[in-house]
Figure 1: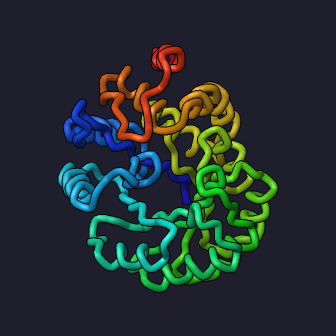
Figure 2: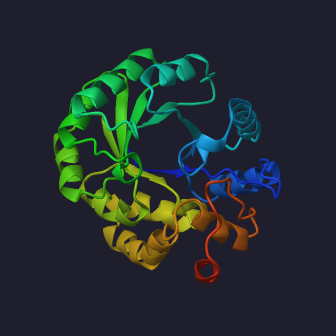
Length: 284
């Protein structure tokens, strides 16, 4: 099965910080016409913690109405297990194929607590769960042994690995059960992860370079030389868009492409003038 490129979709805003649906349409259509396989709604990149329940439903309905043909994955996670389960019970999953759920943050549970959290969510969920390990945001690493234990659950199908720990990533790839997918959560590490046996990426930079990035992902197995060339062509962009956090960087590039404004909701802030100038130059 071909490697997949999923874009962790931003939420574009107007100057009043309401959702900019014209921009949503332009971005989704650009993704659909340039090789992207699917979208992840309401992840970190989508500023999901600043969106209320009604906004999430309206965004979902609007994107479904575009009939883009893109696979849709929904982000539902948190650091209150019962609250995540309640959110799952209140969600209409008919447009979606999978649920991306971030490792509990702030509380810093031990590994047994992480396992219990995900097992409870997976038991309650009507769709397969993708684990999301991002220690830089959560304050805790979900170890390889923990992820491999969870991989045995029949309703946990994949992991989005953003630890940056290649030894850990290789351990998961080497020992994962059949059918369990490993997706890169770091744009800059996607190519090396694919060469080691990962199955795709949940990406941010794919907003701005969907054709090249999806081509890099697809060619990693069949034409690694061309895939490597595309990796190095865009490596600096993959790194630089995160220089002052996300999604301020990628929104700046998309603004230069005339696809959306740069506005983000507090406590996030637009990038500095020096970084803005640099990111705009990468578009041309």
